[in-house]
Image 1 (tube, rainbow, N blue to C red):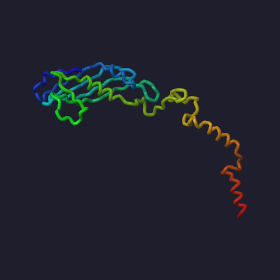
Image 2 (cartoon, helix red, strand yellow):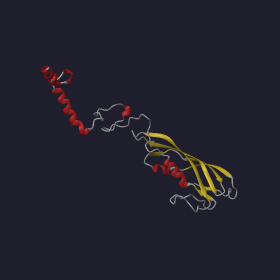
Image 3 (cartoon, rainbow, N blue to C red):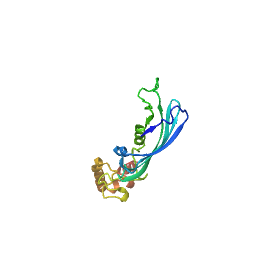
Image 4 (cartoon, one colour):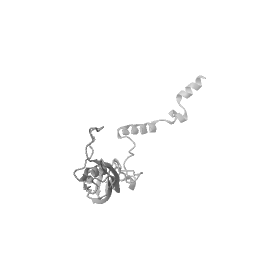
Length: 194
């Protein structure tokens, strides 16, 4: 979005407000975004600071994300704020050589990259449909929110499954007098010596 600032040139402290609807299809390129549900609502205030033009405001965009646990669609609104100064001239002594400051281009400010970066950064890394979403079964992929599946308990490490079978067999073949709750043969031996 390009903003014409000719009405502010040479008038320090002067400002104007703008509200526009912009296309937001670029957000669909993010892997977390399933669909873009509407336009970007941009509300900005542009003020002449003397050294440049301060752009402040907010952006909002309705999108459909995919829950990172159950992969169901989740409708939400991405919201972010803008606070950037476009300078008339580049600063001579910049602290960070990699930090490029936006500059005024004639009588216009190009806020396109600023809008795109701000919205892309506002997308949550791990969106979830609800805080207690149980997700999918790692074995069969069933939705655990709809009920338990017939898969074995996922808390048992599959690499240790043969050991659990061995322990089950040992508990079946162990005689009751060898168990601790019934006493052991060592305890009887110690008693006979005293």
